[in-house]
Each structure stands twice: as C-alpha cells, then as structure tokens.
Length: 179
Image (tube, rainbow, N blue to C red; front, side, top):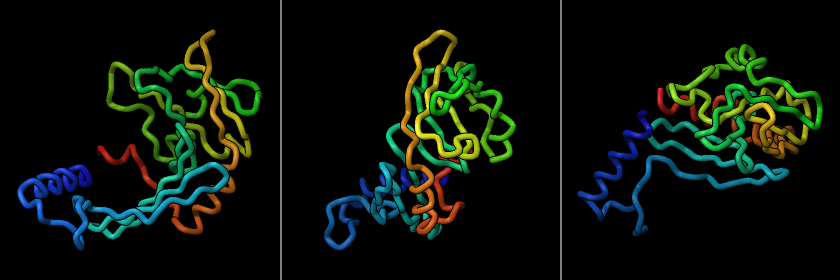
C-alpha cells in the first residue's frame, strides 16, 4: 500500500512540477531504480532499489511463473478458478492443489484472496520441495478439462545464482503489496 501511495504521490507531483527530473532526463523520478536484469537458464532476475526504504527488491520469473517464499507461483488467467485444480510434475501422478495448503500456509501464503467470486485468483502455488528438480508442470483447472503446461526447468540453478545477489527476504512478495 505504501508503494502505491508513493507512486501516486510521485505522479501527482510530476503534474504540478513537470521540471522535476534527474540530471536532464525526461521522465518521472520514481521511488525505485532498476539495477538491471540477469538471465539464467531461461529465468529472469530483476533487482531494484527502493529509494525510500533503501531496500533491495528482487524478482525471479519466467513467462507466467514467478518465485516467491520457497515456492513457484503459476499464473493462469485471473478469472480461472484454480481452487479445485490438480497438477503433475514431469508426467508423475496428479496431485490436488488443496493437498499442499498446509505446506503453503507454513511458508506464509494466504490460502485464498479476498474475492468471493474467485478466491484462487487464477494462481497455483507449488513448493520447491514438491517440485524437487522437476522440469515440466501441467495444471488442469477442472476435471476432464484442458490443461496448461509450464516450463520450470532450471529453477534450481537460477535461484542459486539469484541468491548470490539477493537474500531470501529481498524477493518480491506480491501478496504483501496490498496488506
């Protein structure tokens, strides 16, 4: 919430004082600065510095998958209800997403978001311990429905590389942004 307020304040100030730019640059001074991207095994590591809190904020992602709190978060369309989904890793036996709920709660994930219409928000979270070196994840959102295939290969190498630059607490926690 604080980040949203800072961004809103920055945008409002830029409208009132359009000459506030950094060293002649023609853009808004944002409350963070990017330190670039690194690509490792198909995964992208973004590192930013929040100028207000001087906190490093990192994100590790690949296509529609991102790393958060010792888990991978798979993004399906937000209108998709994934509360009854099942998944399989490398063509192993399918597993219901509800079977992982307690493991995910221990890692600090909310079991659902605030939407009564679709509390899953189109997300499926799988712990890295459950993934255990798996390369391909397939998610079926409803019985006898179509499934979506995600590439999770290289996450261990990418995460090991990312942890050289970022500590575990530096990673983005998108679910914390709106608390």
